[in-house]
Amino acid sequence: MAKVKTTFFCQNCGTQYSKWQGQCNSCKQWNTIAEEMVQKEEKRTWKQESSGQSKVNKPLRIQEIDGSTEMRIPSCNAELDRVLGGGIVPGSVTLLGGEPGIGKSTLLLQITLKLPVKSLYVSGEESQKQIKMRAERIDPKNTNCYVLTETKTQNIFKQIALIEPEIVIIDSIQTLQTDHIESSAGSISQIRECTSELIKFAKESNTPVLLIGHITKDGHIAGPKILEHMVDTVLQFEGDRNHVYRILRALKNRFGSTAELGIYEMLGDGLREVSNPSEILISKNGEELSGTAISATLEGMRPLMVEIQALVSTAVYGTPQRSCTGFNAKRLNMLLAVLEKRAGFRLGAKDVFLNITGGINIDDPSIDLAVIAAVLSSNEDISIGKDICFAAEVGLAGEIRPVQRIDQRILEAEKLGFSTIMISGHNKITLKNHNILIKKVNRIEDVAQFLFG
Image (tube, rainbow, N blue to C red; front, top):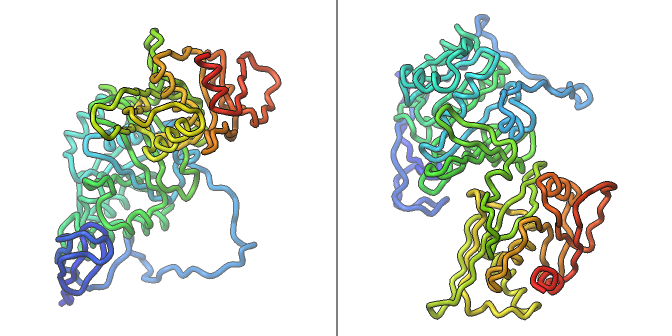
C-alpha cells in the first residue's frame, strides 16, 4: 500500500510547510495554510512506453544543436498571433488568465473552431451541450473540433492517444485532478502536478497546449506562483464585463515580445478582432471640448492614437485630489509639479482628474506631452484642435525630450487625418515625404504659447 503523507500548503503562494501555522512566511498572508494529503507512489508518464524503456537525452555541443526556426501554427486570429509573436509554437504550453465572465472560454473556443487542424477542447466546467450552444453562435460548420468533458488527467491522455489531436485546449487547469495526488481539485499540489503532466505531454509529443487559469481577487492567477514559471507563455485577458472591448496582453513569452497588445470587441457571435485600435480609443464626438488631447503612442510594434481626458477644478476640501485611470498617479504628480515649478501654472490648490479612454493602461512616456496639454486645456477652459496630436516626453527641468520610433508615430497620425503633430525639437526625422505639419518644441512654455497664445 502506498504511503500517505500529510503536508501543508499556502493557498496563496504555494509554499510548503511541515506543520500548520497562522501566517505564511513567504507572502505574509494570514490563514492561508491548509492541510493536503499527498500520496507517494511511482509516477507514470502521460504515455506508457511499450518497450518499457524511457528515452535518455544526451548532451550535445552547441554547434550540433539544430538551430532552424520551428514552423508556427497560425491560429487564424491575427490579434492572438501578434501577441504570441507570429503563431502557436508546437510543443508550447500557454496559460490564459482573466476575470470570470471576461471571455476566456469564448476566445479559445473560437480559435479552436477556426483552426484547420484537428483539435481537442477539454472542459471541466461546462457540459458538451453547453459548449455546443456556444459553438453554434461562433462557427457551426467546423468538423475538426472534438469536445471532451473530463477532469481526470489519466482519462484525458487516453482520449488524446485515440484522437491524436494537433492542439489541446484545457478549460480550466483548476478543475483537473490526477490519481497521483490525493488532495481535491484546485489545490496547490493538484494544480502543480496536473500542469507538470501536461507540460511533459506537450514537450514529448510536440503538441501545443492552451490552458485557462482562474484568477484570485487580487488579480493574480490562482495556484502556486511556480505555475507561471512552468509554462512557456502567460497571457492576460483584461477588460470590463460592462463594456464590449477586451485587451489581450502577454505577461511572459519565451518565443516573442511581451510588449504586444491584442484588442477584441465582444459581440453576440463571439469576439471580433479590432485591427484599428484608434477607432475605440478616440471619441467620435464632433464638438471641440476643453481638457482633451490626442497622443501618438506605441504598444510593441503597433502604433496607437489614444485620447487623454483631464478635468481641473477648484478643490472643495483642504487637500486637492489627484485621480488617474489608465495612467500612473505618481507620474501625474510629477508632471503637475513641473508645471508648477517651471511654467508658473498654479495647480497646487486644484483637483486634477485624468482618464485614458478605451479602458487601457499606457506606460509609454511619450504621452507626457498630451497629458500636460489636456491639463492646461482644462485649466484654461480652451479646447485643443482635434487635428493636433502629441508625442514627446517631459523632463523634470521642463524640457521636451525625444521618444523612439518617431517616424512610425508620424505616419500613423497622418494616416488617421491629423494635420499637426507636436514632438521634441531633438527628435531626428528620416521621413522624406509627409503631408502633416511637424511642430518641434523644446520647453513647456513653447507648448503653452503654441496652443493657447
